[in-house]
Length: 494
Ligand code: NAD
Image (cartoon, rainbow, N blue to C red; front, side, top):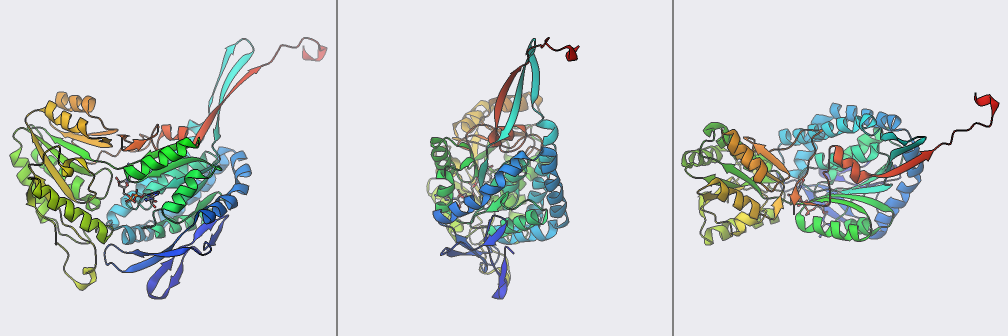
């Protein structure tokens, strides 16, 4: 069992090592609090470097037989996992919501996206068939994709199921054994995924979980047996993991933070645009790397802006909108709003101090939708990722000025244009510095098999985390050249 129900429904999380749930020796236990109520709902061990080495050690024996298994056989485990997850979707969505502050509907959507990645991974037996060519008479060249070996995924708090599921269905199906280091803020969902993996029958050690924080991450990054790393989280840590992992010769893809620009042209469809902008900056209470957090208003779009404020102020702060992960994050957001105001921004909608009615939510972590107008590109509110339901509006006279604002951002996760003109849309698609671009779409997450990934400081490394380019993260190509000379010495050959 991954969890033990302690008194008052507090869940004790354990590591999953070599197919067994184990409490790492001597580990400090951290409280896991529900963002909705502020109450302790779990405890998670902070595994030491030695404890991480033990999990890696316990995974090693599984590698040889798992990688030798034909991909068609490996996919059978994923078929079972996918089926189990689908059956258990509601319980998992409630669990993910309770520890991350997402709404249940958002947590459900994250799980469905995870299922989509499973479907992509299930198609790998077709995609990953390699290639083979007769390059000259009697000589053939062949690509063989081989797994990296023991690999690890380090994930953030804001998508407790989806981000791990960007990683393990693909890397396992490709023949790696996988160690998940979930965010210490949301370890319960990871344990629930571990239980389903166990129920699906994955052999012991093929899928492991190690809980912890910085020490556990650093131990995975420096351990010589971990051959590839996927990281998703803030840019500062992504850069650290990328540099330290790459310096040790590991394959690393580290996705970082974001500051996504929503550009509104004067010819934009007013209704569609206003709703899409509000959904984009308030969904998941702004705690998603695809949130539109900067609105770049081109020319006279005053009516749309008024409508955005009107719709956002109608949103009810509370469980229907989602909570902020912890009190530190609320304080950080409030300070950022204060600073923006002192730098000259106009707070046209102020979410500070807004909270739902009722005793149950009194200790929850809340911030209402906040809109800052007259933000200048040099202000912190325009440049830094705030990670909450805060929208900064920058006004510019022309489309090229809007592109210049977007291009000046060091991040490059996503950008969107709202327009009814194909030519304007095309100019933005070509001109923005972002890995994912939306046209009249506020959250331009590509559907599988189109891959997910940004550029600039939103992505350290090469390729994307899902879709066909993820194959290059989790495998290496072996090139085989074969020559068979024609034998004429045996009468039996004729
Ligand atoms: P975070 O960087 O604080 O934590 C991410 C992971 O790194 C966690 O597992 C954590 O335990 C570990 N970690 C934290 N500090 C560390 C340190 N100093 N050294 C080593 N490891 C450390 O991120 P978070 O607050 O959990 O998640 C929010 C961030 O993730 C935002 O910046 C968001 O934009 C980003 N994110 C990006 C994407 C993407 O696809 N680009 C997707 C989701 C979230």
